[in-house]
Length: 465
Image (cartoon, rainbow, N blue to C red; front, side, top):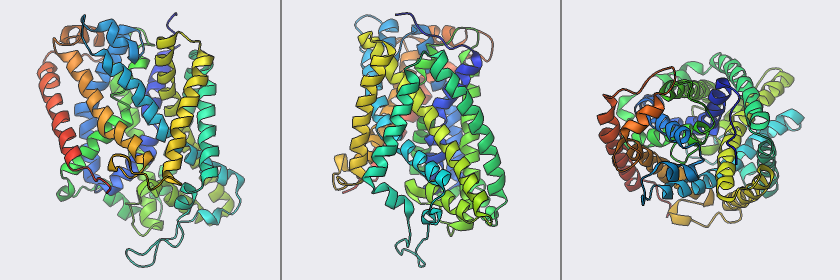
């Protein structure tokens, strides 16, 4: 089966950035930042992107480009005889399915809120009204109401999955690459406009202080672990989501330079999302920045309902959640492409058949997440709270850091592909080069950091009894 290729360097950068940019930036990053102390978390997060995310992304791209295979076959192409590295390839397939099991549900939430603002009926129902006293129950929490509605969740999650796999039925350049280019460009313009507006709100000063002025006393081990896991999550590292795009590109550009470009785009979106959310929290949400998964939905819905002109507020709300849909769908498309590519490498199926089968499996896993948030809410797998949180625990807390560790060891030691092979592949083409002085850092320091923070994170994980 001939390997498909991307049509341009811009397509590769936007497609890879599209995989990285998504709910991790505009939904999970503000949520994690709000619950982890604000600006201190941001500082540690940026450090993790540079010190861990950049070299690991370069390694993942290098393995994919050298092997010209999907993650499930790339180790078999590069590993030494009788090695067992290819087991990680199969775990990558499971990890991508687990990621889509909860990510498509979140994408469905985005689509639902976009439709509500587009239709414009009873938008006051989306206003978040907190309790009047500290610790009091919310008087009105529309996100919680939506979360408990089986019909809404099944319909809109189904729409997200259907659109994603429908696009992937077409050839790579005509389907995924073309659609993602337009989504990413539109996303960036919408994001900038909304950030400018949010900074002009009455409570912006306090919100920006929380977000941009660090309190170093709030930085502890849990914050560092959260920042590392968030860095891996937002860059989709450790489960082959980047390796697959490395297999679709030529050798005209070095991979360290391309990784820098993608991380800069990803970080710009995440930081700008915070500029949208936190000024709004301090203006309309009594400074409550630890709102959990509903933080973005409740805060921004309230913002748009408070516009002096209701029609203008509805239009801005529609545009904001359209942006959220763009961001989420770019990742759904990219990760589902990874799933389809791996299944095709295993079966030699054509694109349409692989998309149908993979779509059904993702739909089944997503249905478990929806039921876990509603009728099966008492089911507590591995003491993670519910099925939705279980998928997130499997991916974010385990597969992403451990998978990233596999890439580091495989690329930097004689037990895997080896340093010389990695450097030769990463440095092919024009652009920034991997230097030999980086070897000791990549071989010893990065694994030590990941292992220490992974163990610390498990020990201090907030298990639900």
